[in-house]
Length: 239
Image 1: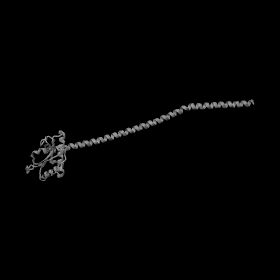
Image 2 (image 1 turned 180 degrees about the horizontal axis):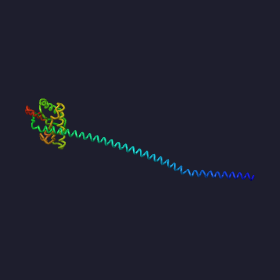
Image 3 (image 1 turned 180 degrees about the vertical axis):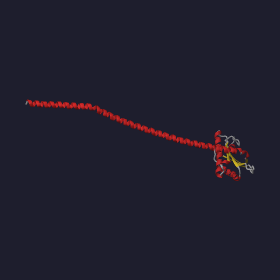
Image 4 (image 1 turned 90 degrees about the horizontal axis):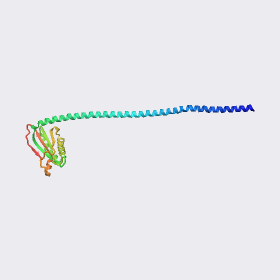
């Protein structure tokens, strides 16, 4: 019995020692691996953060590329528009020079032109639209143009004294334009036959102190001028 108890005791002691040793081994392993696990987790988190930053940088880079491309496209379009504007300006400049040359040649020859006939139409206050009566008067005047040779039409627009000088210059020009457009479109008179100007209220044909006088000043005068050798001044006046 003594031997048996000693054996059992030894076995129990051995198991206890083994259990203690096993626990010690697990604790040791845990203590050794825990920092590695933590480090691995940290590395995974760091890798994920790096990936996010890489994507963020990529997105910002793409946005920058898109913005740069948009700016480049806009600059290209602006350059094209600037080129077109320069071309248009050059064309307008050439046209202005051509008109100036044409006008210069006309002005130099004006002394040879003699008045043949004239007509005057009047307008309502602050108006630049031809009435039926105005058109009829212009039609009667234009009947003479079919047989006219080497002629010019001097078209002068005027206003009464009401309003500023600048506004009346513009108004008188619109009135002269209305007459020119009517004659040119209906009777096919080419543009180089017209010599027109708006004089505003600078030259009155009647006193502006009365309503009737102001009405007469709101007018457009058209004078037929010719330098043909057989042109005899007739001064057929239509009012």
